[in-house]
Image (cartoon, rainbow, N blue to C red; front, side, top):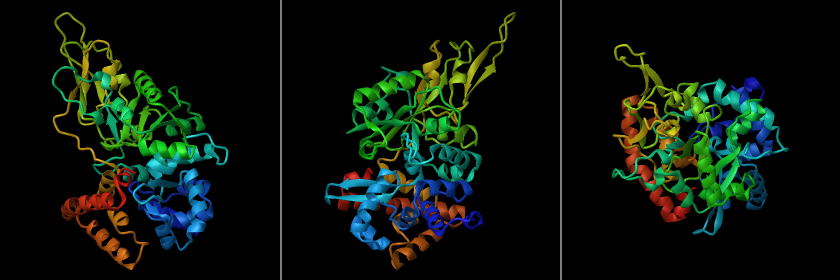
Length: 438
């Protein structure tokens, strides 16, 4: 398909490589334009051969055929542009690098600050067209049970004193307080909308990075360092504005919290305009209406970011006007708590879901599960550019994941139970806990 757009081989190879990541990156005319704006030809050529998981420069040199001396300035330049991720491995006392995935990755980093070295206006239109006008990319990105982001309930709406245990990873304020470092950047989605002539009324400098994510953002100038107090103030303001808190879908050491609006957020737009109802993992909570208190004002329905609340008629008492009350679609409710914060009649509240929502323990577990569910685990476990043996195992595992649905499901369960835990333990043993939470 790329040849139809007269695209150079460097960018065709880069697209194929990035399509092996958990988010996928199907080809299109818009995509190749995006890649040409962000990557030079040499950067594209290098990125197309880089490992998909964190590796030292010596390993990257072997895989790419370039010297360590040649790679070092290239890595510095590409991390500054958000095209490569870097992590200092304290156990090995050296820097590890990996190609940045599209999401969360170089798509966001390109718009987390104002830049004059790329055409951000053109990029914004291309991003929107690629992610919203076509369905192939979002359909692949949001397929599977494990999602990149999870909803964090507005903790001001949580029941107090009823014996319900609220875990720290369920509270955004606890995630911020427990973070080793924090940063704030421009919201990718609102910045993009601004360049498309669709400015948003909500704050722009609000995107919150935490832990390793904050460290990366600060070191490479994608945002600025922010204190715990400032991030808690941002959190409170976002709740007051009725924004949805969408966090990195992990329990331990999340890398970001987004404060999302339904008019700009790519994940919420995927739900509202493309019908991908599970593009964001729900919180552990669910909205519930007290019909005896509901006056049918409709404020909650208007505030709901994904139209999960409708107003329905109830049987009126003789001689009285037919009243309305709120009705919640539990099948799509995010459990964000925006509706409960909006209601001033104490008619809307949050209850814990009957079925527990499973959250990956750390980043590596999330990435592995996402890759497995999307049929891409072979690229992460057995990089087909790392040698003949790895190429064989890549093809073998890929063939298993292309089995008929029932057999594929059984194979995925086997792979998850046998390989994923082993892989995580091996990373911890050889590289340390920081690499697991990269």
